[in-house]
Image (cartoon, rainbow, N blue to C red; front, side):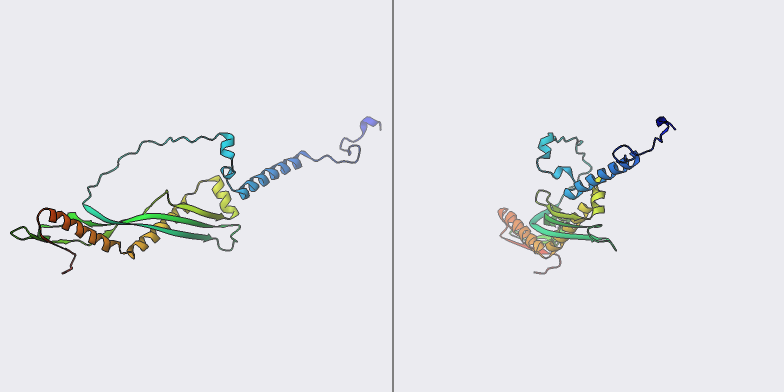
Length: 234
C-alpha cells in the first residue's frame, strides 16, 4: 500500500484529536444559554444596568391615542372629608413541592391612596326640610355619609423589592405578566378601604356637611339650623 492509500480518519500529527462540528455546535448553544441565565441572575432586565440607557441613547416616545369620553355622570354628593392612607403590602406566592429559588415570588409594595366620604344631598325630599313661617329656623334630615372607593396614587405608590424564582424570571423575561402588579394593587386598595372604615371619616364628613349647611342658611337669615342624619332623633 502506498502513502496515498493511508486512512483519512487517522489522528493528525502531534496526537491531538479534532473536535467534531456537532460537538462544537452543542457547546455554542450551552454557552448562549449560560449567558442568558447570567443576565437573568444579574437583574433580569438589561435596563437595570447603570448607565446603559445613556450609553445607547435610549429615547422615550408617547404614541398613545387621545383619551375618549365614555360617559358623564351628574354628581349630587357633597364630599365633605377625605383621608390619606398608606399601607405596606407583603405578598408571597409559593409553589407546592418546589423551593422558592425555583418557583415563587415575594413582592414588597408600598401603596398610598385616598378615600373620600360624602353625603348625597340629592336624596333630600321636601318632607325632610322643615322651615317655620318666619323663616328663622330650619330642620334638615340628611342620609348618612358613605365612603367612596379607595384611589391609589401612582406618584406615591412603589415596589420596594420583588424576589422571583428561576422559572418566574424566565416567564417575566419572555412575556409581560401584569397579574402580579394587579394583585398587590388590589391588596393595597382592600387594606386602605378597611382602614378607612375604622378612621371615623364618615363622622367627620357628617359634621362638616352640617357646618356647611348651617353657615349657608345662616347667611340667608336663618337663626337656628338643625341637621340630623338617618333615623337620628337628636
